[in-house]
Image 1 (cartoon, rainbow, N blue to C red):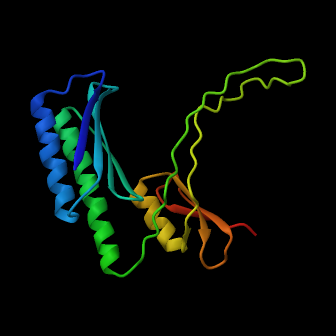
Image 2 (image 1 turned 135 degrees about the horizontal axis):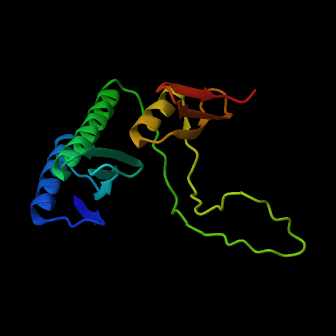
Amino acid sequence: MDIRISGHQIETGEALRSHSEERLGAIVEKHFSRALSSAVTFGKAPGGFFRCDIITHVRHGLILKAAGLASDAHQALDQAVEKIDTQLRRHHRRLKDHQTVHAVREEDASYTIFAEHETEAEEVVQDAPLVIAEMRVDVPEATVSNAVIMLDLRNTNALLFKNAGTGKHNMVYRRGDGSIGWVEPS
């Protein structure tokens, strides 16, 4: 597995790099015979804490994300790796229960910064946020329960999907209180 380790405004020493490769490699190899790649990013967080973000591409369409926050970079890594391990265990348990997970296939993301151009014909809106990135993804067809599984596995706040039962576009999202919301058009 290809593991890229980087630091955001901090140096990553050899001990931290080897610890990261050992911990993440062991967890992923325990669940899959071959994973594609992982990116581990360390950075400083407010309050003197260290943050560790991990993005693991296990197989095409299955992307796991986790983050850890601790007073030591090694502890932050351990927290993030434990979250990845939990996500992989859940995934395997769901596969053993014979639930099919329809993975989202991402197209290449394109990032575009749109500059404000003032012309006489355009109306300028004050306090409007700039669109700084756009991402093209395929909308998966799934049941509501499988969409919730994809939401958990991808560690995102919202997922748009085509409901396999009704054929309409639906959305599941993580609410502020921790529960899952479901939006279905009328």
